Length: 227
Image (cartoon, rainbow, N blue to C red):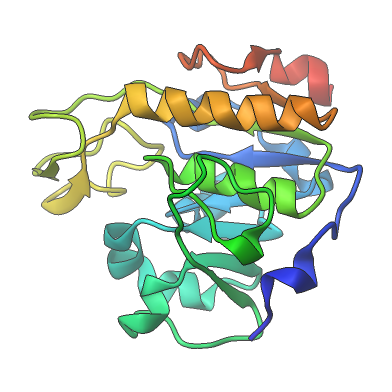
């Protein structure tokens, strides 16, 4: 089982594309991802056939996602950064492709995964810490729609009985699956910490989401970036 030190600065100075799971992905031509270092999140495996790309890295830290998708995640042929609770709960076994990371809450953004990571209310924040650890100079975000339909309070557990309107696939959390309501305000707090940490080190986070609503990161049209 590899340690986080094995991946430290693996891609120093390079750029990557962090693919979140918003429905805007369905309106994009993602063929450019075949030529990029891609970090996929959570249940991105549901879109492999449709979008025709495969990530180099995968990040999943939410226990509901890990419980629901353990078998699919374990079959993924890429390096996986997974919350260590998945190993303790025997959801995922040790593997040459799996790096278990431990959540710590003493700092809002960790620059060293060996010291833990902060979930920051969203897997995207966790993945930004992975990108930083990998030495990535510029992160391009896509699929970060940052808008949701849900009932109840932010952070509550709820059940989607119909199709999922908040992700690229209606089965993502839909049709009776449990999920945690988004906490957008808290997410923005942690995203701000991520941006500040990147920029303090001369790095960048660019939000190229099609129609994205997150106010934290600098915006750019993905077509201008990737041609």
